[in-house]
Length: 520
Ligand code: MTE
Image 1: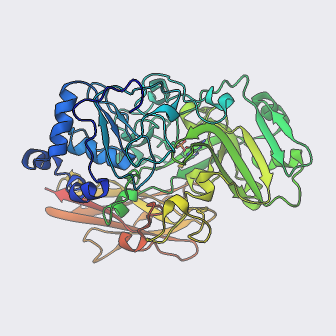
Image 2: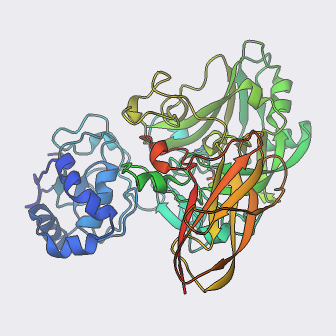
Image 3: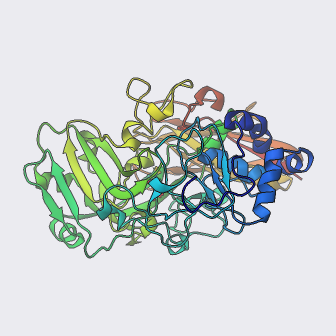
């Protein structure tokens, strides 16, 4: 037991997490947690509640375990992550291991300084690798890895997210991961900043644009160090409308087929479109003199994620051919305004047509290299893996790194679960083909796919954006299932079933979109 921890009666309570999860996960996922809470007596839960009555409790468990625990024991809303209110209890994640076998409870506040995660207690069987407690309050510095970096990395302050609309569906507060309700995207070719989804793997870094510099190095003839002023003065400014889509967009449809523990159940709102203003990465690379040996361009940012073990800053890459294309921007502006901290200020990469993960926010380094980035979010995560693969150790042998976005679509209005009146309704949605493809046709069915009609399709805001579609339909009373499917300029049609697309990380659910409505 580490110094400073006073074990309460609950200390030492342990259950086999895997068996425990098997027992309750389905029930929780089916949203019957209230009934579970009332009807099932669980001795562990009872002891947790008893311990909570005496003060804060430290729970040591994997993030997805905490999600279940929160719903099951504490009747908190299901959410990924772990920043639960302190008056309810301190819930701390110390391990990122899937096979953590016990849940340890201490009837005490987090026992040691948050600046020293290594000193935190370990549950029986918990591997050495540890994480800082995510329930830390305020602007506590996250001290990991390079201390110079840690100085610029703070927990996401509420100021950073306050410009988001109040009805965002927040999958995780820290790091902040949220999408708008689908209806908020309807009829808007450009997404305002308040509505634009946000995907983060670590806390938002606190960068001062006056001292911030971009380093360009690696396989170049001359390394560069550029301020924002240098970028504005030395290179031509370009503005481009482009859609960003997270690879996890519509993951909830895959989770409905089979659970994906530890991953946020994004709906179709992890897709948004803005105009981006900045300079072409190609121009900056040309100024540095890209070497012929360079095959990949790596992007680094100072936000430290504790998803990999040990934690590491965000770093990914794109092949040189994409990096030097005219559409890839180093952007400081979004919808005509300066980038907000949450969306990458002072400078982010925008890689139109590719999964959002490659559009690195808070960019500080661009490195030309022979190989793709060795960073976790390139080398391990964001791969399309077969169902049996272990996502924690994935390599090229297991499945390809994701790049260009796959053809996809979503019904935005009326959205899943809506109640609508009998009679005429206009069904609307988006379709997005990714990379240099365009959507050429969208079919809509209001009888669960038995018959189809072609929707009216917008041209979109240019070659790199989604296209919105709409169709007037007459709805009869009862349950109606709207289905939409898109075709692209290569003649490809979206796959029909999410079940065929299930993969361990829940990426690229581009199956036909469904919205079940109650009419009348
Ligand atoms: N860049 C950094 N530095 N850190 C991140 O966590 N997330 C990526 C990308 N760039 C990420 C990042 C992912 S997965 C997506 S989908 C987009 O940012 C989301 O951009 P947004 O938050 O501006 O919508």
